[in-house]
Image 1 (cartoon, rainbow, N blue to C red):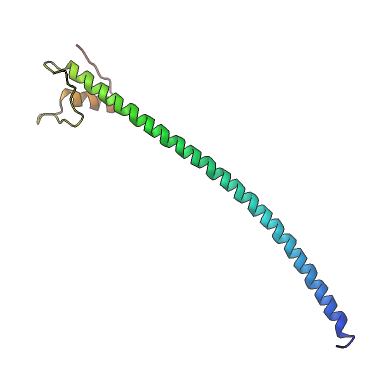
Image 2 (image 1 turned 180 degrees about the vertical axis):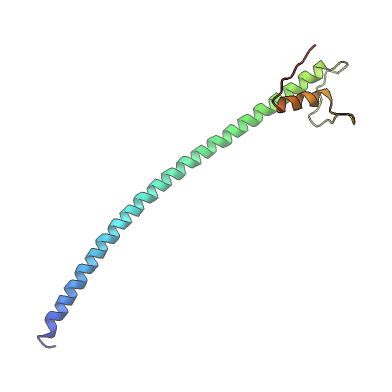
Length: 120
């Protein structure tokens, strides 16, 4: 190789080396930023997972309370009906062809937000 070609190659090699080092620094900083973003997203995902589990537990609790309320309303309606037996009506029983029975009317009043007036 000639002596005139050697400095140009060395200068070009130094330029490429500096460029490569600058890119490595840039990529390293970007990698750190992405790692922090990933950690933040993972933490948010964990919070959402915990909140989701809490909401599911609350739904189960409310379903249980709603079922108990329905049983109480049906029992109270059956007790208020003249000539009723000691057995509360089943929630699946239907009213007569003329309309809903007293238990269903009471249950629909409770479901509709209305007041239930049970008199002995």
